[in-house]
Length: 442
Image (cartoon, rainbow, N blue to C red; front, top):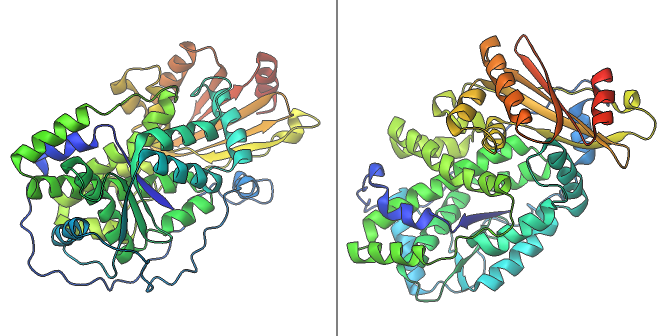
């Protein structure tokens, strides 16, 4: 529903991204008439019946269905201040096509953004589902014990987001004034890129992915969208800000509070990943075939974070669906599904980087071909199986070695099983006794 801009680092990037080049604005800006593409086909664990991980994921998904009934031809009501209209015109020239309707853009305070995103958390991060996921991630060891992901995401939105665009009602809010500074205009260019892309390509498909809890595909699509907005934000800054204004942006950004408080590093890196790797992906597309390649990707988004990290694998290298069978009955009376999640290359790499060297982490997951975890609980203990498949036996062995080293450096209850050909499973549990029980039935 909301595409947001993270404050830390992006504004500085707007003035230093010389490798992207400075485009020549086009004098002719056609209106948008492209049809809205459908949401991509799901990449979920294979359907093997009511006990499959895919079936469990659907049962556990609690994100409410977005309201897509709003007539896209009815413009949102509200004024467009002249300075905002100027940035819209400039984004149109850079983007190569025009807005099909006016964009309502409102300058607001950080407190107002925090209020809106806290309300949005009720939709995007259902309390019960986030409580279950918190237990699963805590059992794996990527977040501290007792962490509430719901509270963490609310805090992140309240402190780290300086603008957002609502794909459902077409409104835009940014941190600033009706006469924005250069830094605020950069934020505006980022969010106005979301708006023009939404009008042409239908970004509400991201809301569909979220509604269906298709985590890996959603992460890939968000990286594309945020990477594209950052790409054109940088081009906008290079084209339309004077050298003095670019210096002002750097000073203003440096004075911003970049502290992330007590938000776990794993969550911070997951959120920042969309912008960093998304920009690299979009830059690679532009180098491949110009802006046309970016537009083609927005019409048919990548379906895995692997494709984002390795642009050469988009669009042909589709992941292998991975199932984790239901072990609740084998674990004993009272055990039931807790959480199911498709796990991609990005998630695994960020997790490994919590304890291992960055280069080792990247190399260990470069051969990813698919992954799913499934967790169970009896109300007190938690048992979890992470099952992964790899492009080759060598890739599987490399990941298994890295995962073993990762477990050795922590205090988690876990063990690597395999590799078995190209498959590697990792078992996690909240207690040693639970881990032993899980090993006996897995």
